[in-house]
Length: 484
Image (cartoon, rainbow, N blue to C red; front, side):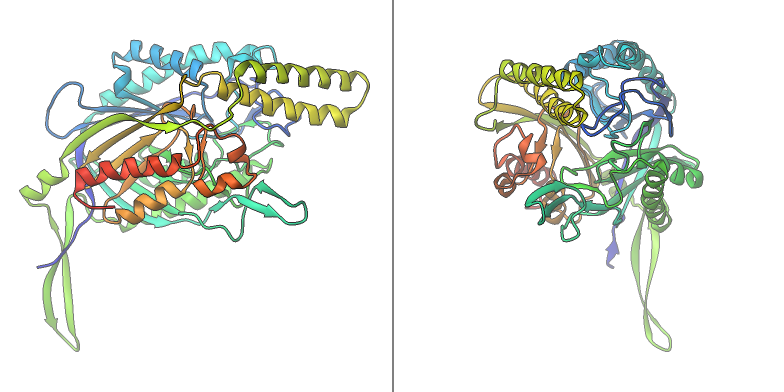
């Protein structure tokens, strides 16, 4: 008899979290257009969530993954390396088992140590030094809750996220903002983790949308829409909700770039309610939908029922495979050197100071914005590995019927569109900014012909996104037998 399979994973899972809200007054400026430097208050707390996943059956001690999800935009390579080392020392894990990822809120505080001389910068180092202990506390809480779990997968769509490469006909230029004609993958993938007694242990929400509801006018520390999303889900499930950002280099909220936290909350509730609808639709854990046969009535009806997994089916869902490797991607031709960029930055800073001395506030503001862009370019260029190719890290785990993918940088949404179209029967949990954003944006090959923000700051050559997508597809094919 036919059966409709409910995608399932069996594993051991633990989850823990800590409050990592920075102090009010910390250096907060993430936007070139912002006129403030210090955070003036807190909209919602920032969290560190640790998720530990181990095989269902006992195996090698190193066969597990530890994901640390931080409510921050990103950390530069130097700060991230220091954090990773300190956390590993505290929790006794090897760095190869640890994946630090980011919600990518642009309102969490700018934690670059090169900005310690700016207003609020004096709080950056003490805050960074406090993070390892808080993450370790979340890790130990996750270890304490580690137990056998059944992961059940479901999906819907949510139109809060929209394509954000918009052509301004009047100004004859591209802008980074809502594009009414643009298309993107609005898939919202939800994972319910259930314990042996049927209790909900956690919910994982995977969605592609830049957390840029709040922008230059906002002066509050905020997780952006993710805060209200979590709250909405947790009020119903009474279990932690973990948000994982999927490829959204060209995707952002339709209602965004505002200063009103209520808009961020509205966006978050929209995604949260969609996630709850998925949870409501899921079957009981470890059950598939089986066709019983025809039933004679006024019409001949087709009857189905949920049945628990057989031993063979249970074994399939407990399959655990893991791989972390590097894909070689070409650098963009003509990248400037760090020395050149630093000299250009210093010149802009000097010009801004001179403009302020002469009372030319308009010119000073424009120079401040240009200096911020140049400062960010320096932060991207300086830590790049030498050579002609960038070693792009990919981490993948096959958990039963599903595959979890963690990649660095900010790929365009095309990556998940292509993979999900190629493997429609395999749930793909795709997480970006995994262990940093050193690779910057990965636009589509054809977009390099357009004067987009993302192509202007890209570090990798045209075709990098497509090469990466194919490498991931090849691994999925190896594990599933399905051809892309």
